[in-house]
Amino acid sequence: MAIVRYERKPGDPLTRRQKENLKRVARIKDEDIDFSDIPELTDEWFARAVRGKFYRPVKEIVSIRLDKDVLAFYRSQGAGYQTRINDTLRAAWGNRKDQDMTPTAVNQEAKLIHGMRGGIPSDRMEQIHSGLPYSMTLRDVLPYLADPIAAPLVGMGKMRARVRLSYGWHMLNQARIALVEADACTIFYEECQRNHTEALYRCQYYLDDAALRLHSSCEHLLRAVIFHWTLSMAEEKESEKSRDSLLLRVLKAAEQSGHGQASVNVAKILRHLRSSRAWKACMSHRNDWVHNRLPAVNGLFPEIVFKSVDYEKELPPAILKYVGMKKGVKLSVGMGKDIKTLRETVRNAYGDLFRAYEGFTGLFAKENESSTRAKG
Image 1 (cartoon, helix red, strand yellow):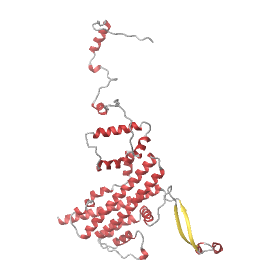
Image 2 (image 1 turned 180 degrees about the horizontal axis):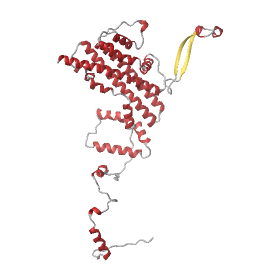
Image 3 (image 1 turned 180 degrees about the vertical axis):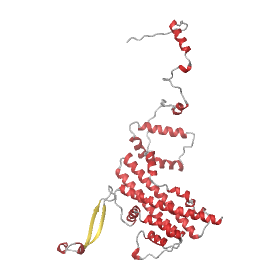
Image 4 (image 1 turned 60 degrees about the vertical axis):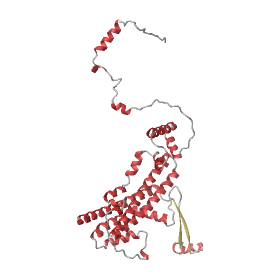
């Protein structure tokens, strides 16, 4: 294909056709001009504009050490992970170039908090949080949960109740944090790291921690109920001892109390908690963990149980003579608990205890309002 070149020299006269075209264009009104292929640059366009999109600074090859989980996250997004790391650093530098970047306790803590969170989509984290009642909101109903000493002075019994309730509320908040971590670790190590065993270990760790804190939180709540309503606790007989005996004893004391509120509302809240299957299963898991029996989880380690056997009761006489012993030990091996089932159990137990706290904070708040009006 031939290339035709034309160069117009300064001073060359316009042709008649060129002059007619210029006159025709000059007669067109502004509102009749078609700008469809070159739209006007509006404020909205400038808001979406990117400065320096085609800027290509000089690259320099360096060797740096990155946290393993950070590197895994960027690599999991496909090719170009080094460019994405560079873009993240440039954005951070652009936001903080006028600030002191010297490491401090504050910014180091932020790095630790967001190290794993960077690998989890924000909508997944919102889903985790939305599935758990937010226990921190209880202080909106009863402000002295956060600081029982700052509230107006009361008698020693009720002050002890406030302190116990505050301790239990803090433990409830910590149990919620542990449950959030259990889900976050599962997502990160299953979907980002592709490490199923690590996900199981970390999930069980935080579920165990949540179960322990829920038990402690419940103990503080029950002590608060005893002190606040001065319940008369019956002596615990040796034959009646069980690991939920305090809950049962407080429930019986509330039912037998002459205080109308304690005998109705308090007993109703405690009865609901004690009847919860999830609460019983969670406390059973906690008791196994505490009392020298490691709860087995399917996929990590089997459930191994040694049980004493009385062969005289279990075996017919014809077989017993070949066994040669009257008593022995039987070994049984199981698969262990399913981690998803355990997760649901502990989460539901948290929900049950949260509702118990919700009920009691409401009762305490109403009593405070009545006391304030009486003094007024």
